[in-house]
Amino acid sequence: MNYPGERTVDLTRYVSNLDKNVYAIFNLPEEVIAVIFAYVSRSSAGFRENLAKLLADDELGVSGSAGGMATAYSEKAARFHEKWVVGYGHSSVAEHAVAHLGVEKISRLASAELELANTFNSFTEYSQRYQRPERGQFYTPPELDKDGETRSAYLRHQERAFDTYESLLKGLIPHLMEKMPREEGESDKRFRSRVEKIAFEDARYVLTLATCTSLGLTGNGRALRDTLVRLLSSRHRESQELARSMEREISQVIPTLLKHVRPSDYLAECRTALAKQPAPAADRHLRGHAFNGPRARFVDLPDYDTALTRLTIQLLIERHGLSYRAAETEAQGLSRSDKENRVDAALSGLRFFDNPLDAFRHLTYHMEIQLSEANWHQLLRHNRGTSFTYGEPTVNLGYTVPPHIQEAGLTETFTRLMEEADQLTEQMQKRCPEAAPYCVTNAHHRQVTATASLWELYHLINLRTSPEAQWDIRAAFEQLSAQLEANHPALIRQAKRRLV
Image 1: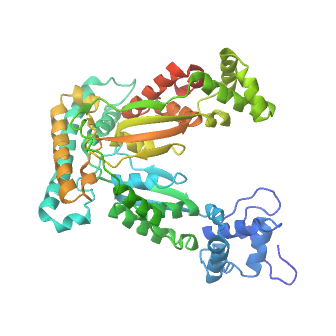
Image 2 (image 1 turned 180 degrees about the horizontal axis):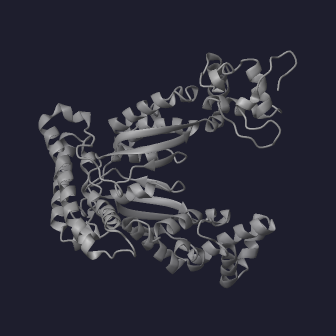
Image 3 (image 1 turned 135 degrees about the vertical axis):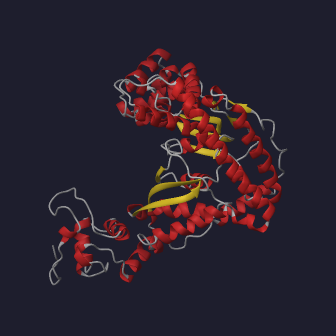
């Protein structure tokens, strides 16, 4: 494809076909793809036509790439992107440029900050449930270098946490092998492997948030830029350094889109302003208290009839194209059973992997959960449609003792480590507050509030109450599910479709 007076361009090096309305795009740098999408938004021509013209003009500076693989990112292409995205503020175009990152040997504390930085990123994280962490793989805050005594205490605690982890494994594995039933035809090797994974899952509760993890990350240019701003604005130096390392590597793929990345003045000023407000008395009433699991409840549960009416309005608009006023009048005139029947019809045929209609997004629910750090890290994953408010890691809200640890008679071993973590964290708050959160364990509770739509709750309850779900997070969503079943029966009755 070429224009009069222009050299011929072989587009088959960059698109999967030349004559169909749907085609794949490849062999172009991510930023170049975003550039051409920007061009399309201001041109009547399609992606292929604009690509051919820009390549013929050598406007993008990629046509001479060896072997047809356009990996060079020329000054021309950079200037072009600077004009469209940076100059014109056409930032939505940045969503078409994607980068994939491997992130290794960061603390559990930093991995949570990274996963919370932007909901448009996708993650797969190393699982302490299925793998055994290596001794010595933990983060040490550089602020500790100023105080040798405190640094030594910190390092001893990290080693003690791993000592306790290994002690728990030694007790859990034989206990579980004796108590757990074998599956039909299960070999000795397979049975032991299955038992060990359950032991890993429970023993990890004594490991600290300093313990290293790894993850894979995929994000678009716009989300990644916002992620870096959040991390650069973090309280924790590790997260700030992580942001600069990520920026360096992402810039190999989408360099122009990351220009002008800097910490947010707003976040810094907001943090300072809030710190000047009168502080309440320290909340330590649950410190040292052992729990069997999380505590979850709805703090703002809509009246049942009101919720039914709101959902019915949306269903009437979607099905019959009514105005909002007409749909509201119609819904208000229906009996409770009539509205429940409409909800049942909307949920009929919902299968294992199906999501309910978008009308279910209009009902929102507010929850508060006190849950272990181990549980919190699970809640962050597979969950991009919930808004969270959360406190910093703390030892003041008690901790969870896994049931198998209690059954195996290992509670004393477990609680000794918890007591040490409580004491050291308090000392760190006075001598090196930057290091204190890294002494908190996976067992310690964090306060979280969450807002989610009924649509999102269908996803979470379906996923997290299934038999395959980990016991801790399953307990949280069983509590929430039970409250919904008692108060909003017609709205939630199809949520546990994995159990059907």
